[in-house]
Length: 432
Image (cartoon, rainbow, N blue to C red; front, side, top):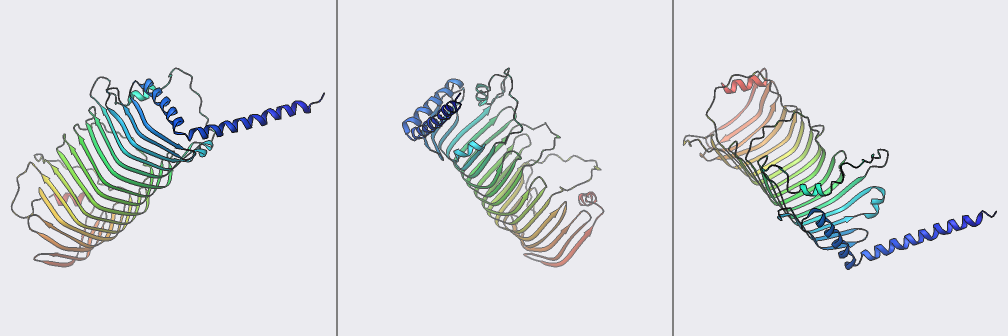
């Protein structure tokens, strides 16, 4: 019996099968380059999702340039109340599609422009978010037999390099917890050196945020306190630039308001290791910024002395240079009357704040720094022209070495040192 003939037939079938699959693959790739084919596929997909969720789903245009570029324009999704859940004017993704074959999602760049999203949860019987219908529609059959995950296979890796966000508006309203957040992002440029969601770990080369506002309102007190210790993600940041950032926070339950404005802020980080509680910064520059706090002071209640020991956070923080200029700071107790005599600490307002310090080191409560300049003017007319000193502070000792203090009418040049048995005794003596 001639065995070679069936072998040749089998090899021939395999050969022509591979050729046919290759030609089909090339044909599919070629077809996907045509706009009409892309629109047809997207139309089928949006109609399927719309029928599945019983909502309006639209994609104005899609452009796929195989094997890298994907562009989506005018993406729209509403919720069950026919309100806008998500709108994105322009989504651009530079993706290495061939990397998917080796379980790797490599996103070389992601660009998102003109996005609007509204997430809400009303205080009703179901207390469900307005996007929960999406999870229900694609949840699948819970009674179906679960497929055992392959723990021996190669894990799926996500690689993210550059992110660009422009004109992003997000509104979050949660009537159940009483949290209301509105954020408007003008522009964000992010460059990653490493990205791992599995750990999680984020190695950020640089991030720049500008023309951005964030408003947070809390109408209820959070009475839930979790004792579970959370593990911080591994985040390393190189350079941070902030320009024109407005942050407002209000808590109706505690009558507290915070208003922050970052005019220009530049942070050059050396190493950030949150899991190990270590932060090393080369420099921080902050200018044309303001910080305001508005509160109501309750009627003083006589407190019994507490025996709790004061412990400072066990972090290690170093900073090479800090330069602050043209800063405003105010703290106001709105329910207390104002005093015209000297500095009113219940209505404190400082302007023209300037700070220059070097070699700041914080190690589990032990602090050392060289203050080269500290100057400010208070609304009462009192002006601190300059303060400089080498500062030392720990659990039993505090010192100001090479002290120089200058006001409008006096100059003090000396060294000050104080010792105490513990931080508790220090705070008790101050309070007496």
